[in-house]
Length: 220
Image (cartoon, rainbow, N blue to C red; front, side):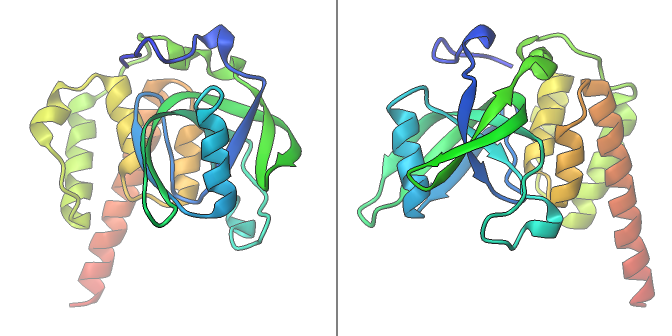
């Protein structure tokens, strides 16, 4: 993943970060996530982040509490840096968050201006700052599974670009943008080496493709 001079060094990652609990919205290192911010507390969170280090922690609520007003959160999320934003005339902020590093929640701390904050431990995910990582064991087979899944789900993918992507960048991009369930995405976020994450993802893609085919057969 290419880091710009504006990205923090690993040693400069903050001990405390604001979090945005949102099911299915995942950012991974090097991956861009567009967001449309309209709730007043999150608009304030963004303006506060822009006034400091530009970092926001994306984290998923647990499936059991997803609809609660203050849902429980998973313990692993990923911080992103606001790399572009624009303000709208109706009070929204449209931004792009670029993934920096995953983190583990140590504890939740007092809210600030209505948004939640946590103490974050980054050490477990120091590898997010390293270019080298374990490769996809069977890249050809992995891409075959990916193509079958995308064909069944109607997902458009620029295959020429995919062929050129490094294993780590590819798996991170797919974690964030494939239409997998929130719990499947969470399992991928929590898996450390790229090779293991790709193996888990291939299993999830194959199961989803098989389920779609079974459903199609039962309709005939």
